[in-house]
Each structure stands twice: as C-alpha cells, then as structure tokens.
Amino acid sequence: MSSSAQVIVLNGGSSSGKSGIARCLQAVLPQAWLAIGVDTLIDVVPARLRLGSEGIGFPEEDLGGDVSVGAEFRLLEDAWMAGVAAMVRAGARVIVDDVFLGGAESRQRWEKALDGLAVLWVGVRCDAGVAAGRELARGDRVSGMAEAQADLVHRGMSYDVEVDTAKAESVECAKVIAARVV
Image (tube, rainbow, N blue to C red; front, top):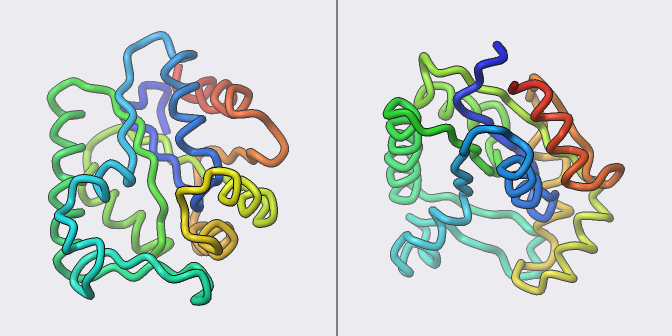
C-alpha cells in the first residue's frame, strides 16, 4: 500500500469499534474523508429485505449470532460497493466500515469494486468477550453477533495494518492507521 491511500477499508466484527475508529480517522487525517458503513446500507434497503431469505437476516438470540445474506441483498450490496468506488474515482476519500461475513470472499468483492484505487486494508480486532460487552451496552444489536463475528471476519484475511480495540482506544487506533495513510 502506498502512502496515497484513497480508500481505507476497516474490517471487523460487530461492536469491534470500527465506527469509532472511522470518526477518529476523520478527525486526525489532514484531508476530508467520508465515512461509510455497511450499517448505512442496511438502513436504506427496503424493510422486506431485512426479513426475508433474499435479504439480510439477523438471527434471534438463540441462534448464535449468525447473519444470513440473500441474493437480492447481495445485488444491492454490489451496486453499493460500485457506488462507493465511483465516489472515490470522482475525487472523494472514503473510509469503509464493513463486516466481512464471507472472510476473504468479502474482500475479493471489494477488491473488484475498488480495482485501480489505492486501498489501505485494516483489520479491526477485538476480543470476543469485550465485543460482547459492548454489544450488550449498545442495546441495538442482536445478542451473540459480536462474539460470533469476532474471529470469523478475519479468517483467511491479510491486512496492511491491524489494530486491537480491546487494547487501545479508538483515537490511538486511528493514529496508527493514519500513519500509514499520510
């Protein structure tokens, strides 16, 4: 990764601290960066795609935190990724906050969309127990997602830089990442 990153992709499980790091990056980086998270995509899809098998399904608490992703949601997600890439190609710098439920396959989908752009790949790690505690404190997540995703999203992954939000505050993590950008 060169020092002229146009895109920073943060990958980590639910409640790992990605959104906090993204906000801190916006504060510490000298240029203006947009922060776009997968939660934004989920918020804007039709309600029926948050329930059915063709959309994105969030588990009940007793199912261990697994999230299912259907074909119709995947099509919209591909379009969203292409849209993020188009913003970067138009001159915006973008921080992507995502959860790679498919591990390396999820990264490959982003690599395809971001082809030709300078990307800094960041692994946001967080101890499963710490993430589960944050999830409980937030109150807006299905119980079990954070613990189930803590290691899953990093399987088969390689990163330009990794941070651990169980060991450092978001601003410190952002400074480590920013040092690789500018």
